[in-house]
Image 1 (spheres, rainbow, N blue to C red):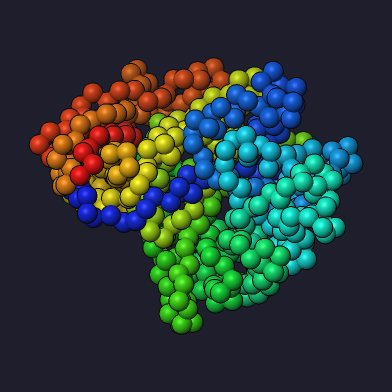
Image 2: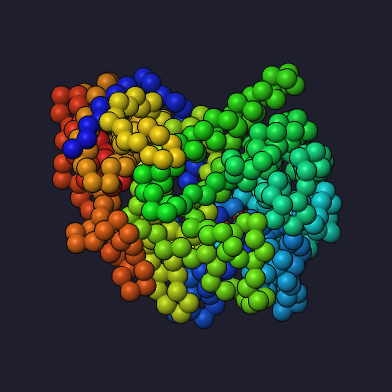
Length: 511
Ligand code: AHR
């Protein structure tokens, strides 16, 4: 049994929970859209072709904002191909994933789907093969009320009222040599600056995200952010971060500690953004948009890995990177969400990549059922319960050694205080593969706490840490009641099973 002692205090807060931290991502890639969220003719599809079984899970998962239409795909995409009568839309080669794009689904369909899902749209523009003109035209088409060629075209295509899309990504992973139209930091920084200006001339209310690094191991990481922000500081609001992690060679200990890399990545980008702020004598602060993150089992040489040339034979919506997630992955995802939440003073947007079928918490079989992967659960519970203020968590945990990160806390935690509803929520991960963890939390300022919810995701009886959900076993891994969670005398005591993710919610007096 390992031990952890945690202290929270009603007065020690990091800031308000940014609700956009619970974002997701839908790309024209594999079966994310086609046979994922959109499958005309599926028994559960509505008249628009939107799968209602998938939508139900999206709502249950609680995603607040969804990034679209890519990803690598956007860097070769003409937004005009996806509007107008479906029968007139061109079929195109998608050079990012080497598939065939029918354009049956485009901007209007995504707006309609987002409204049904109740999510905000985060729209990415193509700064790979296109530039300033296409960017400002797309903003005019989407957001200008009426009386111009493009806004009237939107109305003619079925949407009289503006889409009013506020949040925009200025391209995707432009630092990556795999990106169509890849650029140097100076080339991209200047282009993003001019695109941002032209977009804001059309709609000054936009919030804009500049591309940061595709991951913290990129050779240009750090220098890229510095150069890009030097060009764009006055024009943008956010700089992006992307990161994917996986277990290598059975080294679960290192994999479980991956959130340390996420912490370091975030803190490095904050430092770089603030250095550019100081040097340029800027007043405002740039915030962070972690707009792609997840576990992704890329293997060297895979056609699906960034950096490799995809080869899906120009087929329509083939199965691409449909990872099946296990219990270990769910615990790691819980620690990523903790890292993002603990940095909520600077990370204001985060998008788990992706939403359905492609490295996704939700799976949907063509003409078949939809189900929740293991990683669905930490996201869904945090999106539902992490509200109000982020609490500072002081953690004194037993530690373990691992090859990649060295000394690492066995117990990881984040916590929130929702004053309006009188609720404190804790999100725990126990990284101990074989040991349960005995956790004591001093609840300073929350004397009358009572446990109202205690649930855990753990290795199911008779299975191992690789247990997962799949078409044959759709509910093998889920949340079960956590028996050992008691609050009394200003203290919470929880016993976390080995390798587990848990949520504990307390009801507390308003003051
Ligand atoms: O999410 C899958 C891919 O990963 C995205 O298209 C790209 O931006 C990243 O490399």
